[in-house]
Every structure is written in structure tokens, then in C-alpha cells.
Image (cartoon, rainbow, N blue to C red; front, side, top):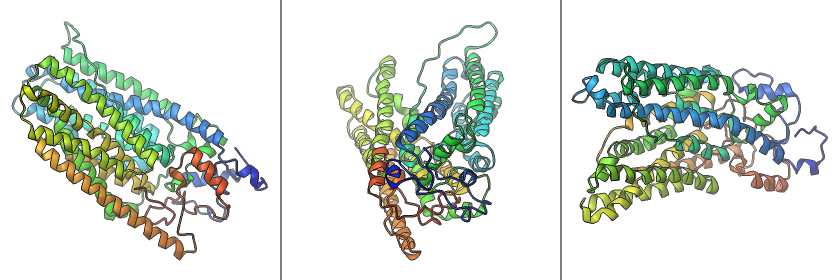
Length: 515
């Protein structure tokens, strides 16, 4: 909804406004080094007000256009990751003469590749159009997966798996970048959880062919499906709200303006080394690294050895498979439920600690109760309690992304985050998992304390420059709360001066840290 400077106060109170007026031309005269959103708003030369109706309409368009593509791509990635397991069942191990640690290396090499690629992905996400970059990465990993069908030995499989990891390394960082540039902070947690909750736990049938082995058909089918879907990504995934084809000119302004309170900008293609330096020296960055590293270590072991743990309770193979089905259901409930709680209470730290409690209790049960048939019930309860852990990673992703501003700093911090995740994907025993879940809870408490201290420092800086010490974080409000806040506001506060200046979270005193 548009309104000129002469709009009445009563009309303005009916709008959910990201600002009282757009930045002046004097403020945005020099756009070099600033966000593209600043240029879009300057060229519009008008006040942009976002009504509840407009907000709902724009959000619906974004959800229906962007989110389905993200869900499909992540589903394909999970399907591609499972192809090695399926292939091993259908004769790959024997035909490729895999022995010793060969099969284990084929799984691990993907994470090595992802670790190596993160800095490169971070640079490309700043310099290249996001939608086009995502499409090319999907295309390349589909081609590589298809090429696995012609790999005849360990070396060939290792090479293709390495390149598969290189191209798949871009998926999660790209999705976090997309989430940051399209949704308000109050909306981001549920969107991150949605695509992370997608998991392909389907069954691949045995396909007979006189020319190809079944595992070759698996590689080709999944790879070619991925290649085909890359065209969908290329055609329908926009690079940013500034140039989205599914939005008209006015809707682009609304889509950008609704993000003003994030204080995170939208998109910039200038790589700033000072942002890299700040990210690497920022204590928060290493909290995110430690958090994701701590949860990735036990999750890797649980994912790998989960069926073996159930089998050790005295169940046969068929029942073991059936009893792992609830494990996946609990994962989805924990992921979406944790995100819903964090969104409702506007707090990540307490919800993360809450999600750590069931795995800790479950680990204790598995350690203390003998793995005998007479104790199957309690042991299964312990196993299912551990399965709450997947709800932790999406909240760490959101916690990190919502507390980082500045285009280059956002991408650098995300790279460090996923380096930690890749490094943490090793196998450990339940005892080690118990210790790490406890360590994780302690790290969450320390991170929360650090963010609270940063908010106090920013409050002092605002007072020093003549601003109010107390700032209401509208970016974390839902529609009803924003409406009430607009009705109570006296309109005396000016615009956040650095919302689209590509300033980092530590440099922008108006930035509010979410704990």
C-alpha cells in the first residue's frame, strides 16, 4: 500500500510500517558499498508503507514461489546422499571391489569436499546472482551423480563422490542466504526448519536390466532427475527481491520495505575484506562453530549406528527397520516443533536447551540399562528420546543467520558454521554423545549471555549518539504485534539509518541481537 507524505496519521496507523518515511536522497546519495535495496528505494522516490493486507499478500507470494523450490532441492540432496546406501545393497560393493575402509571413505569424502568448498561458496554467494548460482550447482551435482554410474572402482567412485560434495556444499549456505533476503527475522526460523525437515526416507525398488546394474540405474535416475530440476531452479528462483520477476515494481518495493527492521540488508555484490576480518574476530562466529560442531559429532554417529543400536536390543532385521520409522517421525516433530516454540517465545537459547534434555536422558538410558530383550521397552524409549536432536541444527542455523548483518560477513559466518558441521560429521559412541549434548547446553548458555551483553553495548552506543537506549525489535513481531505497536507508537522515532547500508551487526548500533 502506498502513501505520500501528506497521508493522515489515522491512515498511517492502519499500516504495518517498516518506517515513517524512506531514506532521504542526501542519505543515499553515495550508493557505493551499500545494499541494492537502498538504490531501489531511492529510485522509487516515494514513501512505502506495508499494510497488513499487503504484507500477507507478499508473504504468500514468496512462500508459494521460493519455498517449494527450496523444499524440492533439499529433498533431491537427501535422496542423492542416500544413493550410496541403496547402491551398496544392490551390488556396488562387490562390483567395485570395495574392501577395508573403502566404503567408509566414500561416505566421508563428501564432508571433506564440503569443508574445503565453504570459503569458495561464500565468495560466490556475494559476487554471483544467487538464483543462477543455485541452478548451476544443482545442475553440476546432478551431472556428477549420473557419472557415478560409469565409475568402475574405488578411485572412480571416490573422485565422483568428492565432486558431488563440492557442488552439494552450496545447498544449505545458499538456502540460508535466500532465507535472509526474503523473510523477516520472525519468519525465518520456521522457513529454515521447513526445508531442513525434508528427508527422503523412501524405498528404491530392484530394477532389472540386461545392460545396467541396479545401482547404476539408481545413480542415473537420481542424477538425471536432479539435472532436470535444475532448469526449474534456473527459471523460477529469482536472485533477490530487487529483481524478482514474479513481483511487479510496487510489490518489489513492499518486499524490500518489509525487511527494513531486520537491519540486515537484502543483497550486495561487493566483497568486503573488512567484513571477513570482523567475522573471524567476532566471538559469536566461534560460538556458532562450536555449537554446530558439538551437535554434528553425535548426530553423525547416531545416524550411522541407529539401526545397529536397535538391533542390539534383540530385534531381528525386519523389526529393526520398522522400529526406526518412529525415529524419523520424532525428528520431524522436533524440528518443526522447536522452530514453532522459538518463534512463539522469540528466544532461541532456552528452546535449544530444552531440545538438549531428551537426548541427554536418552543417552543415559542407553548407557545404564543392559541391552537385553527383557529391557526392550525402556531402551526404545531412550533411543526415541535421542531422536529429538535433529531439531537442534535448524535453530543453530537460524540463530547464527539472524544475528549477523553485512553481506560479506553473513556469507563468511555461514561458511565458518558449515566448516564446523562438516568437521563434526564423524562417528562416536553413545558415551561421547552424552558428553557433547551436555557441552552443547553449556555453550548455548554462554552464547545467550554473550548476545545479551552485545545488546547492552549497543544500547550504550545509541545513547551516546542521541538515540533511545530502548529499541523495540519489530523484526521479531508477528502481524498482530506489529499492528498494536504501530497504534501505540508516537511516531517520533526516525528511520533506522543503516538498515540498507551493508553495515555489520557490530558496527550498526540499531541492530538488535536475538537470544
